[in-house]
Amino acid sequence: MVSRALLINPSIYDFAAYSFWSSPLGLLYIGGILRANDMEVNLIDCMQIVERKRKVDGRAPFVKEKVESPPALKHIRKRFKRYGISRDALIRKLGESKEPDIILITSIMTYWYLGVKEALEAARHVFPSSKIIIGGIYPSLCSAHADRTLREADLIIKNSEIEKFYGFVENAFDKKLTYKPSLYDLDHIPYPCYDLYKTIPFVPLLTSFGCMYRCAYCATPYMHPGIVRRSPGSVIEEVRHWHELGVSRYVLYDDNFLYKNEVYAKPLLKKICSLPFQIDIYNPNAMNGALIDDELAHLLRGAGFREIRIGLESADPVVQKSTGSKISLKHFEKSVTALIDGGFKNNEIVAYILAGLPNQRWEEVKQSIDYVLGIGIQPYIAEYTPIPHTRLFDEYGQCARFPIWEDPIYQNNALFPFAWEGFSEKDLEYLKLYARDKRFPEHTNKE
Ligand code: SF4
Image (cartoon, rainbow, N blue to C red):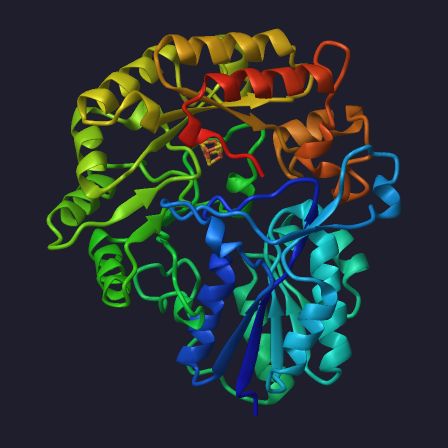
C-alpha cells in the first residue's frame, strides 16, 4: 500500500538565476492532496537560498556554483552555473530519507530540464524500487522531448493530467485514493504544504487560473484554456491559516488577478484591508494596468502591496497590437496616475518592457524605456523567452539563431535566440545597463 511520498524541487542549470519569490507551488499543492489521502509527505527542495542575503521583501539569491557547460552550449561564451545543491548533496539527502513509495519531481522552465534529469537519476540511483513521477511546465510544453529525456521515470504528466496521476497511483499500489480533486477546485483543495519548510519566508496565494487575453508570446492560454477563479473568502481563510504560522509576506503569481475585479479582486482586497493584522504582498508577474481604476489602486495599497508591477511590453502601438493589445498608452498612463493617487510612490511602480522579440529593433526598446522614465516610474526589461505552443514560437521559431524547436535548452532567454543585426547582444547589454542605471537602487537585482 502506498503510504510515503517524497517531493523534489530540482536544482537548475543556467547562466543566471535569482529567487524572485520563486517556489514550487504546484508540487506543494500535490503534496497537500496526498496528505489528504493519509500519506506521509516529505520534501527535498534543492533550490537552497543564501539566507543571509535575503532581502527585507523576501527575494534572495540561490546558492550557486560554476559548472562545465553541456555539449549543446559549449560554443556560448558565458559562465554556466548550477543554482541549488549539487547532485552529490542531493544523493546524500535522499540517503537520509525514509524510502518513499512514490517520488514526485517538478519542473519549471523548459530549458532547465538538465536539473530535472539529474534529480531523476539521483532518485533512481538511491531508490531503485520507488515509482518516480515527473510533472510541471517542461513536460507540459515539450512532451515529446521530456519523454525522450526522462525515460527512467515511471510516469510523466502534463499539468492538466491530474486524473492520469491518480489512476497511476491507484494501479501501481492497488489502492483506492479517497480524495481526488481537480486542481482547478481552488476553493476546496488543501493548502500547499509549506509547513514542510523549517521557516516560511513567503507564501504564494493562488487565486485564479487562466487569462482572458491571448498574448502572442505567452503559454498561459495553452496551459489553462479556461478561466477559474477562487472565492475571496477562501483566499482570506488561507491568509489566516498562514498568519497563524507566522507568515507575513504573500506573493501573487496569478496571470490575470484583476479580471472581473468587481467580483473577485476588489472584494478580496477589501477583506484583506479589514484583517486585524497587516500583510505584505508582491506581484512578480505583472498586472494588467488597463484594469486598474482609482478604487482598485487604493485597495491594492491598503491591502499591503509594497510595489506594483505592470506589463507595458512596448510604448510602440504597433508592437503592442502585434503582441496582444492588452493595454494602450492612454490606459497605461491612467493606471499610473491612479496608482500614485492611491498612495504608491513612483519608485514602487515598475513597468515591464519586452526585449528580444523576433525582428525587434533595439531603438524601439530604448524608446519604451525613455517613455516609462518620462512618466516617472521604473522601467524593467523582460527578456523575451520563446515558449512552445505560443503564436510567436510557431511563426518565428525556425528563424531563431539556435534550434529552439529541437532542444529546449536553446529556449533560454539568456541566449538571446532572436538577436540580429538590428538588435545585437551588445545592444541588449547597453539597454539593460541603461535601464538599470536609471532605476532606483532597490529595484536593481544583480545576481
Ligand atoms: S501575457 Fe499575461 S495578459 Fe497576456 S495572455 Fe499571458 S497571462 Fe494573459
